[in-house]
Image (cartoon, rainbow, N blue to C red; front, top):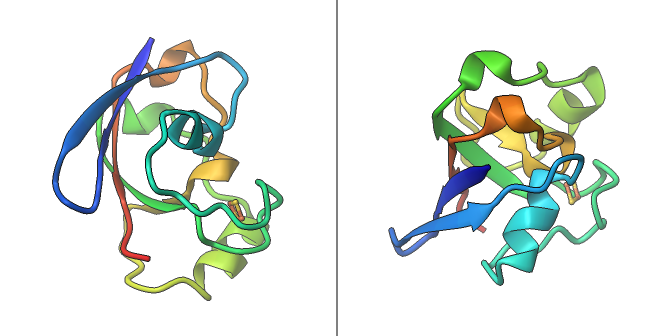
Length: 102
Ligand code: FES
């Protein structure tokens, strides 16, 4: 499975999806610039991404905890998510994301 990530310069990267991994971890391990300062604990919002396409209907909705943290993020849009709160699985194959501004 793959996901597609557009970086802040507009370059598109296809990266390998690993079942059970946080999407933040996939982005970070692909050496894309994502801070993820809290290490995936839903406590920093520096893993903010926009979900642009793919199987968006298969995404687990954001928890109250994630929504509270997104309130503190910049440039939040309707399709904003914290990538540490999205767990990769086969249903999300083909998901398209864009890194939010830092
Ligand atoms: S890595 Fe900190 S909220 Fe996702």
